[in-house]
Amino acid sequence: MKYAVLDLEMCMVPKGIRKYGYKYRQETIQIGAVLLDDNYEVIDEFNTYVKPEYGWIDDFIEKLTGISQHDVADAPSFEEALEAFLDWLPADDVRCVSWSDSDPKQIIHEAFAKGIEDDRLDIIFANWIDCQKTFGQKMDRKKSYSLEDALFISNIAPEGRAHNGLVDAANTATLFTKLETEPDYRLNEWYETARKEDVDHLSFCIGDLFAGLVLA
Image (spheres, rainbow, N blue to C red):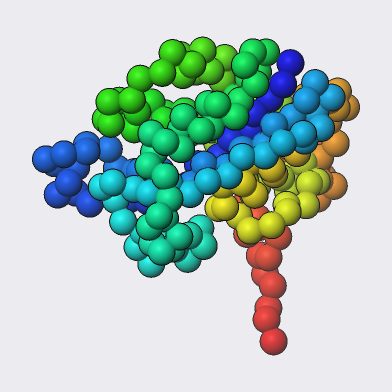
C-alpha cells in the first residue's frame, strides 16, 4: 500500500461572484503532495500552483501562504492541475491522506462547480484518510487539533514554511508515519506532563508555552 499525503492552499472568492456564479467560498491555488511507499518512506512529490478562475490572492493569503497573484498567473487551471495530480498517483493500491477533511471537500466542491468528472476521484474519495481525525482518536479528545499543535504534541519539529502546500503535505506525512508505525506513541514531554496532571480539563495550544513570558 502506498499513501499520497496531500495539502491544498486556497484563496477566497468574492461574495458577489458566489452569489451569481461560483458558489463556494474558496478556490484552489496550490496542490502539494508527497508519496509514501509501504515502508512509509517518501519516494516522490507533486507540486503545482493553480490559477483561480473566480478568486483573487489578497494580501492576507499572500502573507499566509507566500503565494502571490504573479505566481499563479500562468499556472494550470484547476482541471489541468487535478488531472496532473491524478496521473501522478500510482495506478492502484494507493490511499490519499490529508490533515482534516477540508481538502477532499474542496476538491469535491470545486470539481462539481467547474463540471469536472473523473472516475478516479470516486475511488480516492472512498478510501481517503483524515489524519486529523486519526490524531484526535489517538489523543482521545473531541478537539480538532491544528497541524501545528499536533506536530508539537507529537514531538515533531516542523520543516519549512507553514501554509505551503508541499511543506504542509510533508509535515503531515511525518506525523501520519508516526501514527501508523509507533505503537508506543511518544508525546512532547511538556504536553505529556500537563496531560497527566489534568486529564479531564486539559486545554492546549502553542501559546500556552509563552504564557507569562516577559519580553525585554
